Length: 245
Ligand code: FPP
Image 1 (cartoon, rainbow, N blue to C red):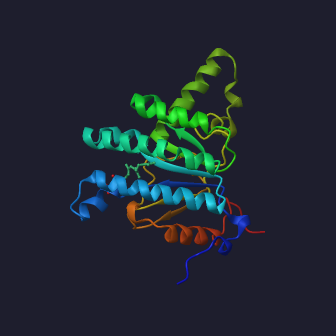
Image 2: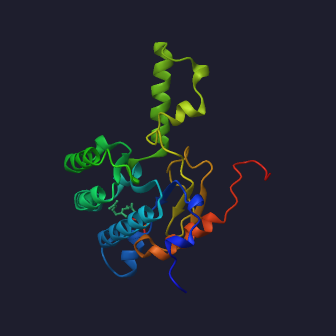
Image 3: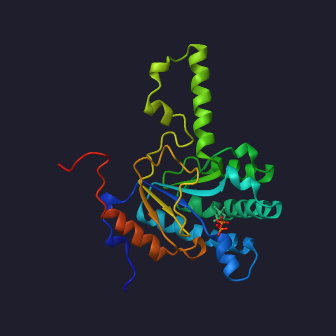
């Protein structure tokens, strides 16, 4: 089969926002009798490929679940290896982000990250903040319940202070207080490795997303498979709870 080209896509149906749960790094490594960290290293290469393809296709927002609030419970050695991979990625991709006008953004409790990772992130977010190409969201120390609970606390405080009335709390008000404020909700969510769960990822924002699960482990997830999913997405009938005209 000939590889899919940009021209194979309907430009009017390119998803504005793609969100991905990058799962299966550990299993990829285990299958090869390697340390789990090797799987994360190979997974970082997949991240580079998927960022490039997303940008080339004109996707405006790409959100990658890189580290969940629950991932802090992994062995110390794995957490620290993931943190150094993240730092390496942030610094090594900076020039590419500037060249292609990519804006780096973080979703999650970034104050919980080790100081060196946090400062790399803050620095590159600042340097790329005026870039008007794709926005790359890294979900780091992110949990959807934690995000929603934080929003509820903040809005409750505003009501308590008399700044807002409880009846003014609408869906739009809630959306505008989440980490994804100002962004369109994901149109498409992909999870690799055969697991069919949402795992505390963007639960509010994914309400109407098209969901694709693939058995492929993240380090093996290729440009071609990503493009096939995007093509399949373009053929889905999105009705948002309504009926066809
Ligand atoms: C899930 O695989 C993956 C993660 C918890 C981390 C994702 C991190 C990367 C892809 C690399 C670093 C990120 C960037 C943005 C450069 P798993 O370890 O849960 O796999 P398993 O389910 O097979 O054990």
